[in-house]
Structure formats: structure tokens, C-alpha cells
Length: 301
Image (cartoon, rainbow, N blue to C red; front, top):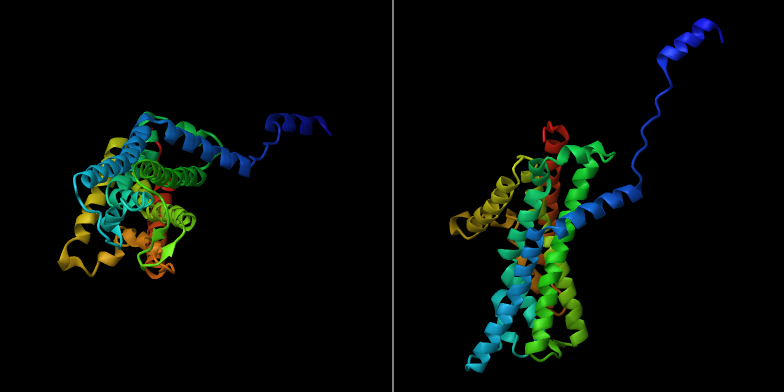
């Protein structure tokens, strides 16, 4: 190498080392970090505490009503009608608690967590530091959404586990009478309860995607949470207006209570499949909108 070439090489400096793509293990570590961050927050623990208290209140109320001469009745069907079966079988407290928390309490909790996902980081000034790591905006957004989905499952299981414990403590357990009128074993009924918890968690995925999208629109965590909960309330009201019945099947809460069809013998899948398809549509639309917004957004906080 000539002296001129050597001097030119010195001026150019060493060849840059190409950046390495984060590995799968690194991505899983990012998801685990996000999930731990969500679960450790006092706000999240308070939400889970409220959700766990709902089955306790329902169980105590039914127990007091039974002692006071109130009738359990033989009602079947979904939603509040599950309450009439609790005195005969404590496992029905799981179904009644999920039916009671799904319209308001569970989606509000998910709305708070999803709304705070991105906006909360921006408000606290940590979003820029998260993007300094080799995560990439898309990978970070996916990790955030995965942690919100995990919270959907955790919150649902907290309600189900609390209801099962209270139901076993206050009421007898045994064979389960399905909505179709047939009887299944307690083990089969317990499996149906787990399936219902999974269906409820999936039912909240569309709400989670909507909340994540709202979270990318603002740098205020409180504003994002309030907006997400406000949208939930608005959609719930729209679904109850008779004149708007034509759009009701396209609102994400419309098929939420279809989980009752899991208690039919055999399981009635029509409404369940429509629910899954509707939630997938909301995830695709608002997930794409969140990605488009976040990947082009100027991060100033």
C-alpha cells in the first residue's frame, strides 16, 4: 500500500460495523419487561383488586338474599340469568361475574392500560430512551400491544379465579346444567369456565387495539385513558339506541356476551365466530392505524 493510500485510509477511519437485528430472545425480553412494568404499577394492581372484589360482592349478595328467603330460581341463559343458578352450583358465580364485569369494569380496566401504553411513556419522558435501544418502533409497538393483551387475560383470570374461590366457599359444587338443559360433569363445567375466560379475553382485543391507537395520538397519559374510556361509553350508548340497530353488529361490544354459548350442549359457535371476526377486524384496522401513526410520529418526549 502506498503512502497516499495509507493516509486516505486513515482519514476514512475504520469501516462501520453494520447494526445487528435484535434476536427473538431480545424481543421476548422486551415483552417481558413491558408486562412486568404494567403489572407492577399501583394503578394496575388497584384495577385488579376492584375486579377481584366484584365476584365477592355478587356472592355475598346472593348468599344474603338466599338466607332472607330470596329464590334462586331455575333461570337459564346468558348474562344476569346466571345469578339464578349460583345457589345450586357455585361454579355459576364464575359465569355471572364475567357477565357482570364484561360490559363496563373489564373494558374500562383494559382501556386505562391500553391508553397509557404509549402516552404514559411520552408523558414521563421515557419514550425516547426506549427507542434508543435497538428495539425499533414497530417492535416496541408490538411489545406494548402484547403486554396489553396479556393484561386482558390476567384481568379475566383474576375475575374467574376470585369467583371460583368465593363460589366454592359459599355454595355447593357439582354437575352443571347447561343452557340447553343437559347436565355435564363438574370437570367439564370447569373446562367450559376456562374456555369462557379465554373468549372474554379475546373479546377485549379490539378494545385494546383501539386504546393503543388513541395512546399514539397524544403525549398525555391521562388524556389517552380518558378518551379511551369515553369512546367505550359512547359505543355502549350507541349500541342501545333502537334507531341505530343497523350499525350495532359492527360495534366491538355487540357480541361480547356470546360467551354464554359455550355453556350450550353442544357449543353454539355462530355468535362466537362473529365475535372473533369482529375483534380481528378492529385489531387490524386500529392496529394498522396505531402503527402508521407511531412510526411517522416525531418523538419529542
